Length: 186
Image (cartoon, rainbow, N blue to C red; front, side, top):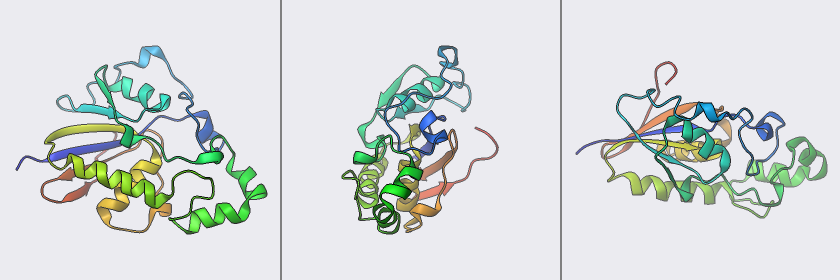
């Protein structure tokens, strides 16, 4: 059986991240047209490049090549009415709702997607890749990466995983998903 090699990479930094806001469909903080294709040689061989539908994931994916496939399953968590809201503001205006959301993965006080729902979406997507051999580079969001890790590790530590902009992890499927930490900067 040929292995599926999945590299999950978080999109580059946005102003919303810098301001500790729930995201909108914002662009990258420092997007330059000249960056297109600048990271195409970062991997041995040419991985299949996938990304979420948001502008920030598409702009990051363009750094790795022009043949990018947009995958709905890689979209960010739906934060409902909290989109664009600063976390500090929520701590003042809706502290109980924010705490409920942080403590209960089935909670969605914002009217969007719960962490459990996000995990189910990501689990279905991972399952669909199990028969897809080769290297896949998926540019996505920290919440999607955290959900993938909790699925693979069968853990409940979702809120204990931090995923920084442009960080990456690799998952491989050879009958079972395995986490592989990458050496140095990819």
